[in-house]
Length: 217
Image 1: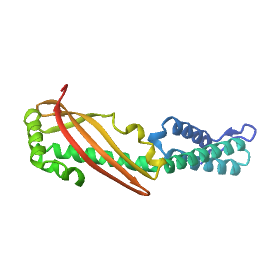
Image 2 (image 1 turned 30 degrees about the vertical axis):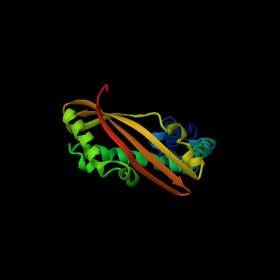
Image 3 (image 1 turned 90 degrees about the vertical axis):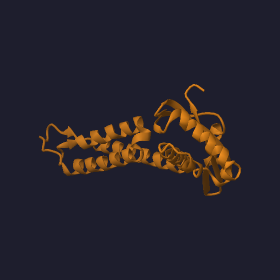
């Protein structure tokens, strides 16, 4: 609640000032605060507006209250529009992160059998299992088990077409990425290729390729 103040010296609502500050942070930290920033700013603005109306003149700036509420509403609507217009891309990136996390967990075991099972059905059908496992065993002999991934590089393939996921009803993408990682015996790299397929509202993904190599090779 706002503290009392002399009528001849009305002061600006601290809630309104805080709402404007939160709106500013929502713009600066757009991807981190997401929709929570404008929502918090809107609640603060409405509480400040109610406080101004109930203050009996001890709080000023009803116009500032309208500005704060309007700004929060605009940011809230903008966030909602972005979430809707980029829905398939956000879902696809979640699939990519899940695939990377599953690969990391498997490689920490230092055995290749579970990693082969992560491949998509199409990839398994077109891959010689024995050759795949032999290649991974060779990588494990030189590098040891995975300790932690240190950086991920998204490059090449169909990454430039990634926005098409929200623009077209039928899209097929092959997305290569490289994870720099620390292994038991030194630094190395995990090369992956992930497929994304959209047909109407259905989004499918799969791990199509995986290879280990020492750093710098």
